[in-house]
Amino acid sequence: MQLEIQNVSKRYNKNTYGLKDFSITIEKGILGLLGPNGAGKSTLLKMIATVSKPTDGVILLNKNNIVKDPNYIRKQLGFLPQDFGVYPNLNAFEFLEYIAAMKGVGGSNLKTRIAQLLEGLNLIAAAKKPIGSYSGGMKQRVGIAQALLNHPKVIIFDEPTVGLDPEERVRFRNLISDLANDCIVILSSHIVSDIDAIADEVAIMKNGSLIVKATQEDIIEKVEGKVFEVIIEKEELSQFKSSHVIISTKREKGKLQVRYISDHPIENSELKEANLEDAYLNLTKNN
Image (cartoon, helix red, strand yellow):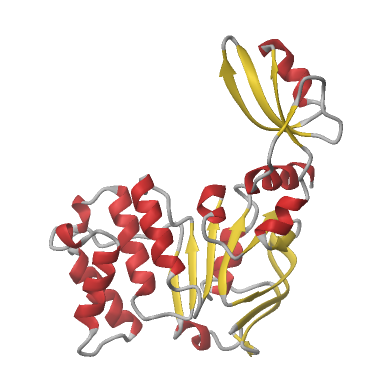
């Protein structure tokens, strides 16, 4: 199973691109797609899902051109878009049966499959209630369930944990981890903790371009020995920002504890172990 995006661009007008000359190869496992808002993540995912066509370039799944033959991927695709909508008057069982019919999924095991997904996403207790009465997080979980209905081989999640509480996020990660050995899973988010817990590889985007695609360990290695924390006065923060990449700040006894990245740390700084968020912020701020 291999997905190849080759020199893909999405142009909206003469000078505005959602993606520009973008290339990446994705194989089985979980790819975490990170980038700030406007990086082009959703644009890329919609083209892989054949919701949108590239202006230039080719997208291949197992060497099949899915721009020319979109049905090849649609038969084996599960997709949760960022703007997923539901029918509020249907309950979860009815809605998933409707989506199954739209996807051509049927058979004697369908009800069992729906029940398994609802159980796995902690929705069984509310499954007979209208979706319109659900919280935002519950609706999101219905969206995750519909993406997995047809036992897909390519699964795309665009900001799937929006609205989920911490317990639901863990449940989602466990569910996705079970699929990773046999599928291509693309998990797009701007929340680094959603990625670092389960992704086999990470791709970082900015301004419609790919900055890096590598294992988490290789990406983190780029900032090893460069992450520090120091206590400064609040009025020093503005000047400090002008010469360092700041990861986070925290108030401490009237002062600020600053986590930052630098090749030349200031006096009294304490070296810290680097993580994926440090590397991500460093790459997106410096590129």
